[in-house]
Image 1 (cartoon, rainbow, N blue to C red):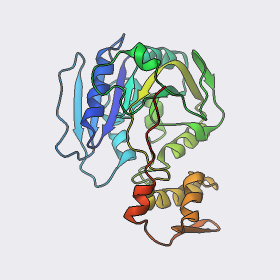
Image 2: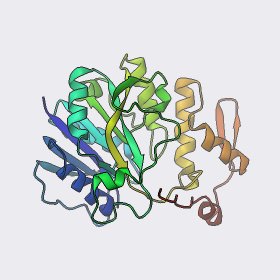
Image 3: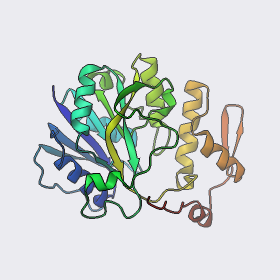
Length: 283
């Protein structure tokens, strides 16, 4: 049984370097690490690693998140996959915990994410110190250790998740009709449920989420979100990203009529700037 760790990246070399460092500290190294570079400028370069490393280049425009994750999975040689977003630092026990969990369960497994402040893990860091600073997710509740089944497929997230490679391929991976940002992971969670794949939340071993700018709502991705929400609605008969869509409506950017979204205007630079959230204060 082998584990491939997969990540996709566009122009975040500092975050990628800390992910590398987390993998180097793993109690059990992955059998390979695959990076899909989504046209970073300059291109992502290889670092010294104590495990096999492969970098793929994807020159599609924008943020081809679904296509990039699928390319990583196709290139993987492991029979188990651990997807990590580039802003995630795996904890020391994560690779072994995911490997064990996928050995025990044929499931879609979300690992717990702990959120760092803006000045955490920017240089030298210690895992125990980071654990004393983190904040949990306000909605997704994880067990202290082990797994619990989560029946709400809408709570699947792609930040850190494990799956058997063959199940991922049998599902067709992420739907590349979802372009750019928003909705592709929720659709994947819904399709996994439809395919009879349980969603499990793994507590204890997880990943640290490195701080970066957050926009609420993400006005800079308005066009992508409108497109992807419409596609999701047509398929699943409900609206995804409801909070964002409501905020767009309130701002006079869109209007929903029945099953359709009508784009009224683009946000101004000032509106986008105002949507940028202030960093939290680390505990």
